[in-house]
Amino acid sequence: MALYAAYGTNLDAEQMRERCPHSPSRGSGWLVGWRLTFGGEDLGWEGAVATLVEDVGSQVFVMVYDVPTQDEDTLDQWEGADTGLYRKIRLRVQTLQGNELAWLYVLDGYEGGLPSARYLGLMADAAEKAGAPDDYVAELRRRPCATSGPSPGA
Image (cartoon, rainbow, N blue to C red; front, side, top):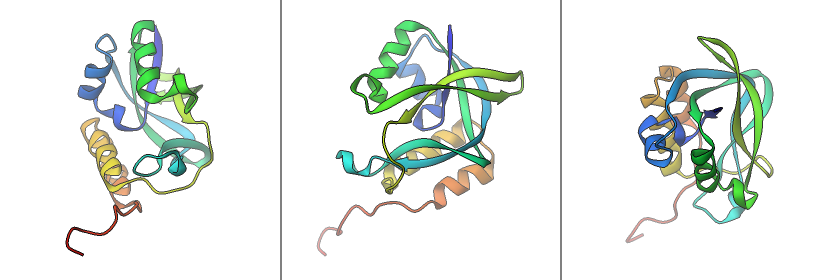
């Protein structure tokens, strides 16, 4: 069984149970030397989507899941890996059990752009549910985001 490290909305174990019912959580960890960022704003969604880039002074909170092949195929579809939007890489995750090798998705595109406020809120909520430290969640909530346009009646 392969290990998957989630850093976006899949930090939420309930969401992962709906998407991948055979993939239990193994607990949380950190990707040391990586930074959470956003890209793909030009791909047609409501804003940029989460990805990771190498950054020696940073770390990203993750939730680690045991993912069998049947759920991996489903997750590839959810994440757009089967369309080339994201690609899979393998990294070492620092967990309480030690360093573990896990795969994760990174955007196959350039860094840049702003996520929507809704998407950023879902990510922060997922991180909070997963037990991320308060300062990590607060930093997610403070990130700049795209405006959704004029309000009704404006």
